[in-house]
Image 1 (spheres, rainbow, N blue to C red):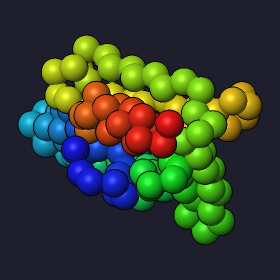
Image 2: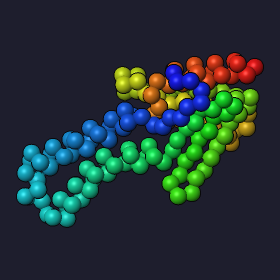
Image 3: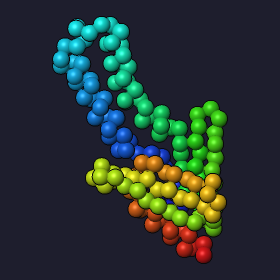
Length: 145
């Protein structure tokens, strides 16, 4: 894992379903001859769907960032207005790592960090190598104690 401090965001690997659906729909449109058969409005609809499948990951990745610092963990989310959640290491109550089947195969998962109050929670969704991130956070916590 990187040395503290560092920043991270959601991995493109976690959008594997978007990419599969986008490529599948694009291949269907191109190979079935649907462009010549379908109504122009339906064609625009299907092409828009393909664009959404490929552009939605980029918007999601740029919407939320995570910062692992020496004293705290920070989540900043938003495009125009920003929301910032900061959890000091001293108030971390629980760290949970979730990985699904695809996450285990491709090496991504969620890391949920909660503080003493139930409102303060940072959910790092779809980050690469969540176990390494967990061990880096735990090592910083051990240094602080």
